[in-house]
Image 1: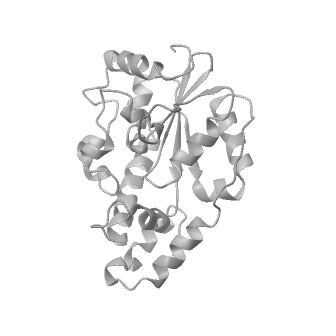
Image 2: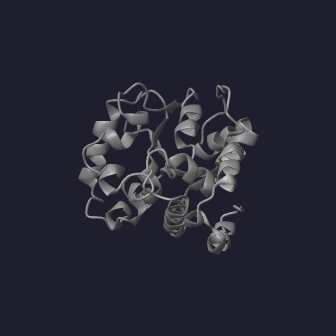
Length: 240
């Protein structure tokens, strides 16, 4: 797979990375992970070099762990790491397709690391409304409030935004845009990856965010007040 160009996709848990990767993987030029037995077919579980997000606290917590933020200065940013990752991921990827897609949530804090290992790679960051992310993540993190999850969302996005200045090829995709016009978003990804368009679209749950936002607005908890965070959310284009 040394001739394949990597596209690394990342974003906070419940941001739509699994859905987008699944749709992107229907393109005949894209080699993705399918039926691997790993959770959500994520590349983070199909290698033995980089830690899993659970080792850094998992959903709603991982970005706070300094080691989760990997750059070109990381001790693992070596040619040997690149060789091992290609070898391990290559067991699951069709070598006859020009683009290799690797999706894992913690990638959003590893784009600089992967750019150093695999020059010429493309990076796709998936954003979704922080309240929708928080509400849908709580089934995995009942000990965390919506406010705490939104604060983690902001912390992670701030890190990713700062990293973006160091990336040669970064595309930001909003979950809301994917729901509104999936064909346009996927065509944009194809152009970004340098391949032809051609995707299979299934039925999408376009009302999920509205349900999460309505449920949050009906909630009683003072701990979930986000008033002082609205300015920071607005910088990323999201409002409550």
